[in-house]
Picture 1 (cartoon, rainbow, N blue to C red):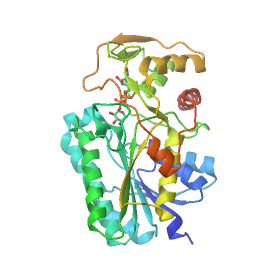
Picture 2 (picture 1 turned 45 degrees about the vertical axis):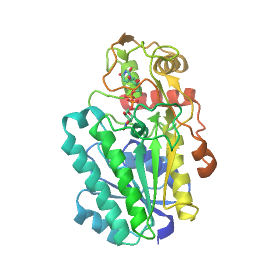
Picture 3 (picture 1 turned 90 degrees about the horizontal axis):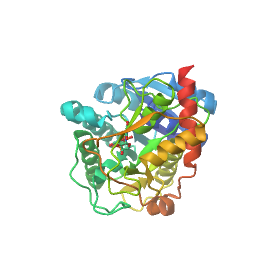
Picture 4 (picture 1 turned 135 degrees about the horizontal axis):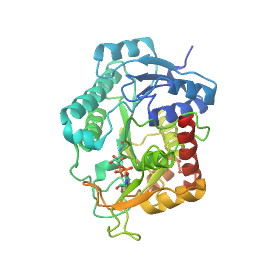
Length: 342
Ligand code: WQD
């Protein structure tokens, strides 16, 4: 019989961050129940999770926007904690189809919080994003850095969901929430058994790099080298996906061990180190011993010149720190792409 305290519901658990988090939760001794509607992920992620951990998580194909189906999950499984990943995540698409983003990302989250409250399940971990900081006035950003008005409906859903969680934890006794603000998650599990599965042409830098290296894309466009940064390309805080997954375990530990100091808390999850786009490209070439065809093109609309995390709070309060080197992360990213090609 599963232990309710040690069971975590992971919505969006077959996706990129969800599947890596499921692995680390299982490795840490938690029982994992995954729900996913599989619109942007594959069921065979479960095979990867099982191969890595030796345990297959329980799985239900459920759309978290479907309150009835979600309620049945709450009736069937006893868990104290939920990690809510289930969301659409393409910034550009959210500009063209805002309603798709507002309705999916917010309804699914509100349904989840509502049922947590109704069933008296205490812990909600929300998957937020550094995108909430927008183009901040100072770098690195701390959790206190004021959020800027969101530049996309996607970013706005992250801000609104954070506010929903804050308000609900304030209003409903016994409900606790933590928002993790991810910087730029990259890489794959070192086993190359799970990783990111972008559909169509990738928008994000690292999948575009690995697909270019694999010959699927002709060349990488580097969007602008005239920013006010050391080499003119944008600066980002690239966080290894396994390190990021471990931050979720530290967060769930904190919640289940009753260590929270407030009913709603926020943590930045990054490395604390800015890396330029060009540095990343060159690092990828070096560690994987290959040449990447690339060209400098114009700036991409909406990109901010630089954002990186102050991770002091996560380091000190959560007791979590990014550990994997960028070289290892870039090797894992390529190993995963090669695995996909087989
Ligand atoms: C990184 C850098 C590009 C592609 C976005 C979302 C954020 C989060 C992660 C997730 C930028 C440059 C990129 C390419 C390039 N969302 N680039 N050529 O924009 O920092 O963050 O993804 O679900 O909320 O906003 O990430 O990987 O798209 O870009 O030169 O082909 O790489 O200009 O400077 P971004 P990214």
